[in-house]
Structure formats: structure tokens, C-alpha cells
Image 1 (cartoon, rainbow, N blue to C red):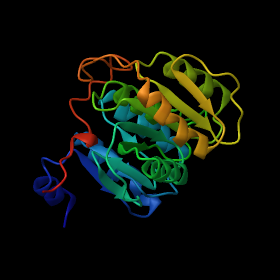
Image 2: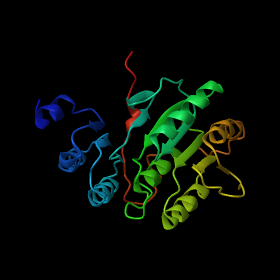
Image 3: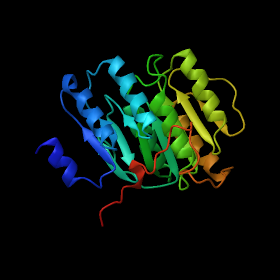
Length: 242
């Protein structure tokens, strides 16, 4: 099937999943973004320069680029790439670690909770060259996605300048946030922001925050991280087949 035929058949699909050799991935990601699609890119071996450029392009268009090298995600309960079957719930995850997302999601399931939306970013998103673009946009969108009551953020330790801007964004969120930068002790907890040390601690503490949610009712269609983020919809709007 050609790309044009795929766009014709999937004209109503909000997301394109790309899994091809990385040397060929960047042009196809750009074509999908130009077609107005969010992109989940399983391919690796995409240059970090292309990743930064394409994530900025996605941001400018009000879209999400998950990846490159994004291994897992959940869109309105629908698994993307490698994912575990867990119950739907009021937890939203944004993660720069696919295994971290899976471990936290399955632990939440075991504790009786559920995850409806999990946005993978790819492992390099919080490097200085990429500036956490997808993670920041993902947090902003989950903060404005009404069914989500608690946001979980997972990453390996980010570049310092990216870490500072991410933490500022999390402090400004309207919903409780549990954050773990794996292997980094973040120190004291703050109102509405629990800084965990392990993935197990991350999963267990989201339940406490969920019970004490200080959420505000927002229209995520109107409130964005920046004025450029004008997403009219998102992959989490996909409907599960009946």
C-alpha cells in the first residue's frame, strides 16, 4: 500500500504508527505530521537533530510526536506497540522510558487502579538537544484531559536545564502529579507534586493522590502549554472497537 493510499483509507485516523528502518523514518514522520496526524514512531536510529526538528514541527502544528524509539503507549485504552493489558482508569502517564511506563501501569493495575492514557516520548526527549518537547506537551494535554485525575511522569534523569523547566511545568499543573527521575532522589515533596524515587513508589502513591485530587474542571481544547499548541484532538480520543 502506498502512503497516499494509506492516508485515503485512514483519513479519519488521528495517529500514524511508523515502524521502518530509522534511516528512512524522518521523511515519513514529516509527511504524517504534514497530513495532520499525531505520530507514534517505533523506529530507532533517527538522528537527534531530526528528532528535535520534527518534535518542534509537531509542536508548531499542535500535534504529538511520540518517539523516535518509542516502545509503548496507550491511547484511550488502546495499546500501541508493546503494551500490557491493564484496566482503564483515571491515571495518565507521560514517560521517556517504555519499560518504566509498563512497570508503573501494571503495578497500578495490581493495586486496583487503571491507566487510560500513556504517552511515550522516546528515551532522548529530555536531553538538552530535544528540550523535553513531547513530555511537556504530553503533560499539558493530560492536565487538560478531563477524565485524567492524576498525572504520572517517568524518565531517566534529564539534562539539568530540561529538568528545571519540566519541574516548573509540573508545579503549575492543575492536577496532582507523581514524578520519578529513575535513580535520582528529588528531595522534598510539594503540594500537588509527589517526587518518588522508585517505580513501585510512583505507582503506589498515585492512588493516594487520586483520592485527594485537587483537580479543576478545564477544557483541554482551550488551555495549552503555549499558544502554538492548538491540538483539536488527540490519540486518546480513539474509540475502542465494540
